[in-house]
Length: 339
Picture 1 (spheres, rainbow, N blue to C red):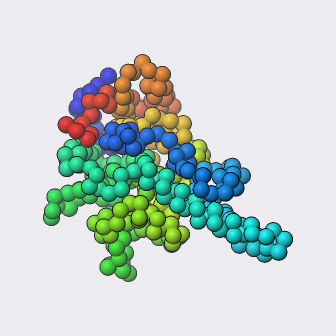
Picture 2: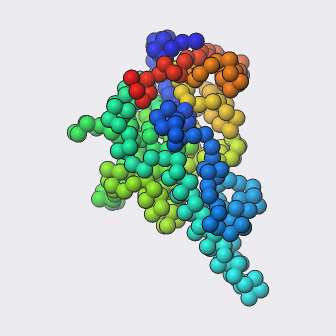
């Protein structure tokens, strides 16, 4: 097994080096906050009616946006039968409103509220790590990657480009938007969306600390009150995630971008889990020549054996003219947040 430095040296024979981040990137920064687990499992439904919790089961989903929308739509229809069903519409609206706050609190409980909670040293070390790569892809929906990339010295522009720009028809807006034509040269992609990107229905808006000075929890609460939802794919199976990806311009473009890369790919902080199989399949079918997979801890542990086995299967599944090599590096030797 390589150290990270050895793996990176080995990768220098390739013209392009890309990075895929998983939740281990965030856990390495704040292990007491970023733990594996779905927002749904962290949510506290105790203040709502039992029906609000059961609505997820009835719809066969753990997606807050889908349930909130279903409750709102259903309440409008049930209101037509109000004389028969009494206060059902009112309860549905109340539960929909309550679920918004449950979502805000679930997110807030698993994320720092503002960039100042990270130290200057953490920012500096992480930027050095990220600058090793031509393109950065992340499966995380938290803001750590974004905060690091935006944390530059006064007068210094970020070296990263996430494709968001000031809207042409409102240059004074306190947010930026993403359009497909802005993605040329984009080198940072949130493959499953992110908490600071909001879907308004007609455009994607990114709210920033620099432009608003508003903390994360308040940005999310304000957006939800206007029926804008954070664009993130955090729940469900690989098939459910892929369905969501294909029906959103940004996510679909990110998917195609990842599918097109060649050269070397470093995977850090990801367990190659089944619920992200839609991206593992893109590695198998794509043009990447060499994958370097980070292994944290004892390589002989059951969890790491599963990662190693799945990584080797990536190479075995490769068909076509190009072969895929797989190597492993000790993730503990990677200087991501501290030198």
